[in-house]
Length: 483
Image 1 (cartoon, rainbow, N blue to C red):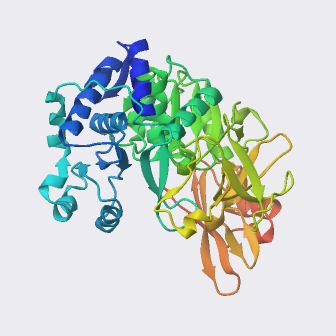
Image 2: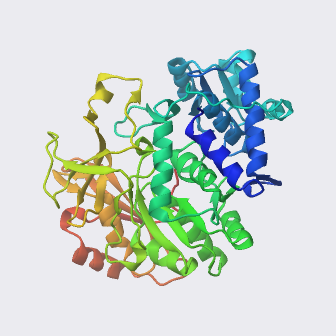
């Protein structure tokens, strides 16, 4: 049988044949339309001699063509490597040497160096690739050649160490991730969402695209993230669900402050991954989206996006820093540096296991093998589990500020700072120091036009932060840099 992505699309098209599934610029594709596009794309791949296990680079960005290539490749057992449209020539060259793709599909953003690195027969531009629609539809055979354990996608991430490595995401991983989100967020085919985060990252590919095609919900696909456009789409189409990082929601919040946007009542659910929302942003989201439940998500590329989900509304609880409980089939273990499990409530390294967690990295090395302990993967994150089974993230090991041996957990300090009146956003970073090695420095964005007393703020920091946690320098900025 085909891979999970293709199977889920075929199932959804049979159930909701005329329902809009992908809306992009002036295109609106029903599930049947998109299935037919995928079949034409599969025919294109077949006629170019693609077979199970071959590798294709997908550098088409947030486009219909990216989606069609992903699903067509999955139908045939072809492994997709999603490539960032922001990749530079050195990174791209390294991936080429590691994986030797049969063909590279690219858009204009990476065109200059793709042409320098690859012969014409090994590359195809977005403009030329669009011609796949002229191919006859390939009816995908139901056989046993593509299995759940087969790799569907390899997504490169710095992840748990500094060296980039490929998370080998299987069909089973993708299916488990979709099931976890459906169970944890109670989404249905009546829901709609916006995919404006990069589709070549795990949130875009798994937590939005794959999930909503499996659900039969409508996706408004955007080539770039523009806050004013996102807010307009929500209002115009009564969008019900948004998934993004704290950065995404901080940008939306800032846009609302500038434009005086009123509340958007259609949104009923927000999922926030890739970090924790601070309490200041949570309060602002409550005003902007008054009917939305806010769900914090802890996950990573290696867990195909979801691992823990806060199933209630995190803004309506005192545990607003909780990342929730393990999602469907997931298991968490908190361990010390020697890999020994720690008691409930003690802080240590977060190990994860479950059907959504990858089994290995590409390439397989001694260093990556050591990250696995039986069925568990060492995430490199630090946290603890309380008596109710909720996971609390303290920090990533590489992001902890080590001030003379005392550990400063950035999210914890940022959350406390964000509770001071008229603080909109905070970023705590490390600065080298001759005495302590590292010391914390804060960059703070305050609400435009609002009164802010710096002296009162310093008194607040002294009352709420230990001496080693307090920023040695504070910079008031008009905008925080985004990555």
